[in-house]
Amino acid sequence: MDEQLPLREATLGDLPVLVRHRRMMFVDMGPAEGKEATAADLARMDTAYAEHLRRQMSADILHAWVIDSPDGIVASGVLSIMSWPPKPGDTTGRGIYESIGFRPWDTFMRLHIE
Image (cartoon, rainbow, N blue to C red):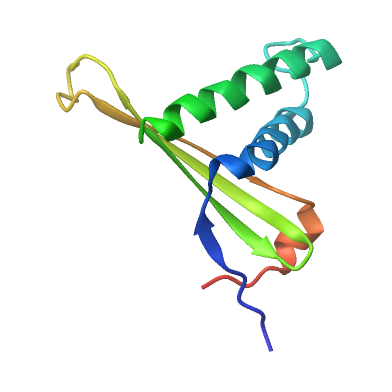
C-alpha cells in the first residue's frame, strides 16, 4: 500500500529546511555562470535567503509548503508573487517565482503523491 505523506504550509520554524533545500539545489546544479560556488558563497546565500524568507513569509508575499515524513521534511516548494511594470505581451504587472527542493533523490522517487 502506498503511503500518503502530508503536505502542509511551511512556517517560520521550517526556515532551516527551506534554506538547506535551496543550498542543495545549487550544489546539485554545479557551477553557475561558469563559477563553482565556494563554501563562503553558500553560507552568505543561506543567511540572505533565510532573512528573505522571514520577511516575505511575514508579509504574506511568499508561501512555502513542505511534505513531512516520519524521518522529517522530504520535499519543499516555494512560491513568490512578484510585481514588475507591465510590458508588451504581459500587462498584468505580476509574476511568479517558484523553487522545489527535496532530500534525498531516492527518497523523493519513492514518494507516491496524488
